[in-house]
Amino acid sequence: MPQITYCVSLELNGDEFVLRRQQEDRYQLLRVKPPFLATVISGNSQPRYMNVKGIVNQENIDVQKITFEHLQLEAASIGLKGSPTKVKTTFTKQHNSDRDLIELPVAEAANLIAQKLSEKHYI
Image 1 (cartoon, rainbow, N blue to C red):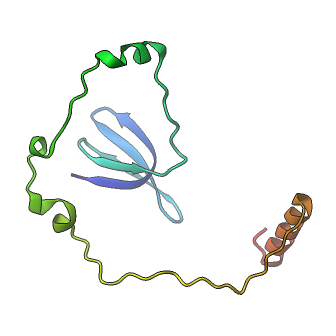
Image 2 (cartoon, rainbow, N blue to C red; image 1 turned 60 degrees about the vertical axis):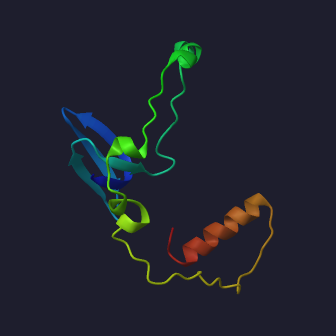
Image 3 (cartoon, one colour; image 1 turned 90 degrees about the horizontal axis):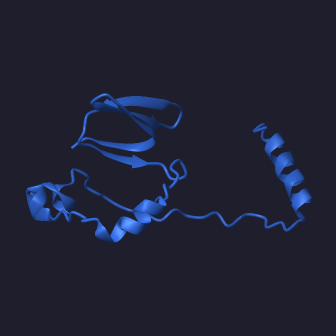
């Protein structure tokens, strides 16, 4: 099943979907036909709240439960055993504690941040 990660938008176009995928320095447009799996970057989606009719009728709706047997997949092709990724080593990022803690009122803090960013030519 195709998997598309870091999606910022998804639109249905006929019988296929057009997804906009965020990369470090650009966006990539992809077309894919269902079924597929897409992950969305947090903050880009807004929850859709049920309408009153949906809230009232929620107890009458039959939710289909899909189990492993329904999917008809081989156990060796999914999960840890089926993953093509092999982790060689892991490490914890070392923190540099050589930092200054400055407590200022908001306006002064904003000016200091702007000054530091300007010195480094970020703004």
